[in-house]
Each structure stands twice: as C-alpha cells, then as structure tokens.
Image (cartoon, rainbow, N blue to C red; front, top):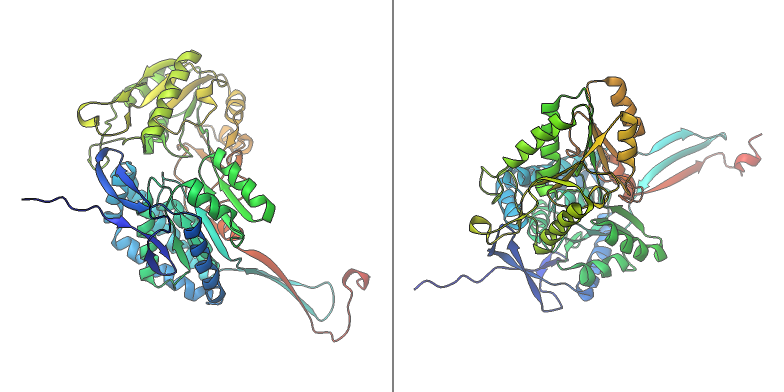
Length: 500
C-alpha cells in the first residue's frame, strides 16, 4: 500500500549550519498555480533566531573583512559557475513556488548568475582615488571600507535575482549577510545560500532566517548590531523600515513601488509598441515593480493601438508556468488576487472602460490556483486610482494624450518614479523624454522592464530613498569611503592655514 511522503522541512542557515527555529513553528509554501502542491515546510523565525544569525554574522565579519577582495571574488566566481550548472532545476523550483512562467524564472536565475559574475569581477576593481595634495611632501588617497553585518529583506517576485543584487555586492565589499527572504518564495533563496556555501563562503558570512515581516523582518531591521539594511518591497513597509533604521542612523536602502508608463507617440512603430505593452504589462503577471501598468497613447493612433492591444491580450494563455504554452501565470497568493479584483471594481466605479478581462479565472484548470484574467481598461483619466496606485497584478490602464508634453505631465503625475518608456521614431522627442521623465530608468522603443546588472537600478520619489541597486552603485551603498592623508614632510603642516 502506498504511503504519503512527509513534506520536506527547510531550516534556518546560521553560522554554517541548518538549524531549527527557536519558535518551534513552521509554515507551508504552496504552488500558487496548484495549491494542492506543497513545496515544503519552512521554519517561522523569531527575534531569537535573528539574534543568533546577527551574532554569527558579526563574529564572521572580523575575519571576512580581512580576506583580500580578489580571494572573496574567487568564491563568488565559483558560486556563479554552480548557478550555471543548476539553472534549469532552480528555474523549475522557482516556477513551482512563485508561479511565473519558466522562461521568466530562467531569466531570474540568469540575473543572479550575471550579478555574481559581475561582482566577482569587482574583486579586483574596488577602486579608490589618489590625488595630489595641496601641500608639499604629502600624499592623499581614498579607499573603500566594509561596514559590518548587513540585514537584507527581499520580495517574492524575483526570489533569486533580488537577493543576489544585495548579497553579492555586500560580500565582495567584505561585509557579512543575514537574509530574510519573502515568506512566499523562500526556496529560491535557500538554493542561493546553498550554492554560496558550496563555493566556499566561510561559516557565519552568509546566514538565512525564514519567516514573516513582523516576527523576522522587523527584528532584523531594528537590530542594534546591524548597521546596514537593504529592503525591496512595498512603499508602506519601506516607510516602516526607514523609521526603524533612523534612530541608529543605519545605512538604509529602500527599493519600493512603481506606477510605470509606456508612452506611445503618433509616429511609433505600433507593432513594436503593442509587443512592449503586452510584455511590460503582463510579464510576471504584472507583479513587477517595473511593470508597465499605464500606457499613454497619442490620440491620433489611440483607437488603432487599443484595438491591437486588446486583441493580443485576449489571446494570452493563462495557466501553469511549467507548461511551455503558457504566457502568464497566477498571482502569488490569495491576498494578491483579492487586491487585483478590488482594483478592477475600483476602475469600473471610476468610469474606466473595461476592454478585456476583469475577472478571476476559476474552475477546471484554474480551480486550485490564484488566477486572474489579463485586464485592460481604456479611456482612463490619469487621476483615476487605477492609474495612480500600484496594483501589482495583470491590470493595464490606457490613457489618451495629445502631445509629448502632455504625456510627460501624465507620466510624472504619480507618487512613484521608477521606470518609464517612450515609443517614437523622432530622435528629438526621444531625447526630450529621457531628459524630462523624472524616473530612475527610461527606455526608448522598449518596455519599462529589462534592467541589466551592470547599470544602476532604482527610482525617485516614493520608489526609493536615493540609493541604487546593481552596478557600482550597489558597492557605493555597501561600503564607506575613507580618506587617508600621509604627511612625510617631517613637520607640522596645517592644510589651508599654511596653503597661502
């Protein structure tokens, strides 16, 4: 007689060992496309677990910071090689726990590979500056220095890419890490930590505590021995973390919401613009901070564009992301699905024209998952809530515009400033848009998604607090500058006082 296989229990990783939570509790991680499938049980961490992880990271920092950066880089390079070898398995696991289609989860893992290779290269390029002194027989330079144990709180929509954005620059800079992944997608972070461990990261340098925000994330952000906190998630939670970090003047990086726009001018390649709007709006089921949830279309091509867009959206196949024919997967969980459904009702009540979708998908193949039809609203006012607030789901608002100036006003007229895009064949307009759009990222003739790891990622206004992920900008966040003066004149020199 067949017997049920017990679900796998995933533990915390603290000081080089997989350990139980002090809480004695655990939670289920289930497939959002089929909630009958249990991915695993993950321990529910509390403040005691966080204390243990921070203690381990703090102790390990004493020696890790002294490891030469090129040697730290060799470990990251080995980790990147392991990620390459396991990309397909990790991608399938990510689709099972997060829901997005396999092509996208492969891209997620690839982004972690790219970031790890990139930061490995920075092990020989943690450059400072040398400069002539204004006084004789005096040498002046600046160097980067590490900071300490870094607390990292990451979201569920890019469960391997975003942890890599934070961990790799922190590690190459000589810091240690305590990672608290999103409770909806912890498995991908477990894979990343396992790879780093196999690659040779010493005990205590990387630690992982799973659990929710109030019981694990909050103690981490508030911990007195954590001088650096990096967070990606909602603006509401980011505000709470900023307040927690403020009393101790911690380094605090916040990457938060977006209400991104694609501008389609009358001279645009409409086929290309429709491709971009579909991918930008419905890739990852619209669950990206860079998702193109608004499309502003010039009145001269508005009807033609909308007709084409609606036809394309109606043809999207929604389903299990492991099915190669699926275009769009489920929402991450029931609460997110309910949020999407509530915004659809808000859009209807505001007078937006529902052009396609607008409903939950249930029954049949959808019965066990959190699926919503890809949805397009037309004739939207830029001040409608569906055109102002981040929905984080497969809902796109189309807004008619009369000119580039009008489009820029609409684009900038939201609380966020992450990404924007313009489709035009006019190079002058393209450059004007890149100048006037107040966002951290601008695309020309491409959608609002598609960031590359060697360029800064982040936004303005309520999207962030001035820091950037990825590229050298990330190293700027995870290091402090130290300026060094060496006076070999053998006499007292008083800088500006004697520099006359």
